[in-house]
Image 1 (cartoon, protein in one colour):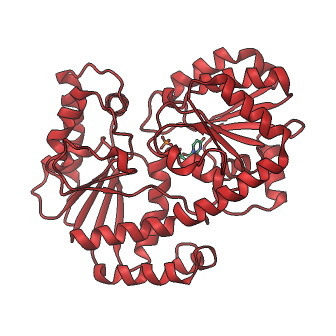
Image 2: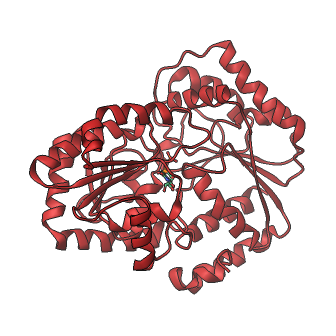
Length: 402
Ligand code: UDP
């Protein structure tokens, strides 16, 4: 059974598995509730869909609920998300009202009698104000908090201060101006999901045919929601530069997350900008949500690019490294935890278009280098960013808090 920690034994070794069961012992029968705002799309849903069932297999009662909201709510919370990453915001009373009302409505229909509550990201953050608090509440922030817009930070802080603990993805995201206990837990990937499991060649061929992706030229791929912070327009610029030297094809694969209303707008912008390239087949845009397709693309591409201008962590980087595919990415946020420049990938300034193009060409011309980076990438992820480590850290933290 995939969700049995035993299945992970071959990948991470006996000690890790024994340690998971040992740490879980203190927590038998505890009800832990996770709340976020989408079942599909984006890194948070990706992680919860493995973490929750795996925790259940260790004797904990882990649960996952979704905060429902209408499109206006998600427009507001995406603005909050952007502002937390430093963008400007007009923080009107109307926005605050929508934010609070949606959370309040959820609370009317949802009883929380669990032993601990884990709230993911800003959308369900104010829920805490609608409950009589009977258990520890933890805010799990997946966003880069180094330079938030002061207005939004001050507003959201009024909720965060009520929490018992905050988890961020890297040391740098801890806030000195937040007198709440803060823990660092980097995200992780599950090596046994359809997105990350090994694939037969026949499956790869089937998916390439299904999505009309020819392999007559090397593929450069970015897998990311169509989001300004992922800079798909910048990727097109880089691609044009590479194309002057090498005949390659670009794939931008970005499914639409239900809690990210910006997706369609950015997708249309990209489509417009790359119109000619799309028409002649040099650029392929994909919006389907398909885990095996992502797996296939991360395996067959010559280079995976992640040209984000901000990145809380960047699970897409982890996923590609795990598959031994070389990654060229921006030196921002959580990507810097994952790539050691020149050892398991390359890091560049996000606006260094020439640099990105040069490194892509270098890798295309040097398969030995690509292989070496790939091998280092796989081992680095095995040691640091697999779901088993994430479970251990969660169990440890819950053990301390409960
Ligand atoms: N993803 C996907 N299909 C897509 C685009 C993204 O399944 O078309 C997944 C991707 O594989 C990764 C997650 O969505 O697991 C994105 O996580 P990441 O941390 O990179 O970025 P986020 O979207 O959370 O900002």
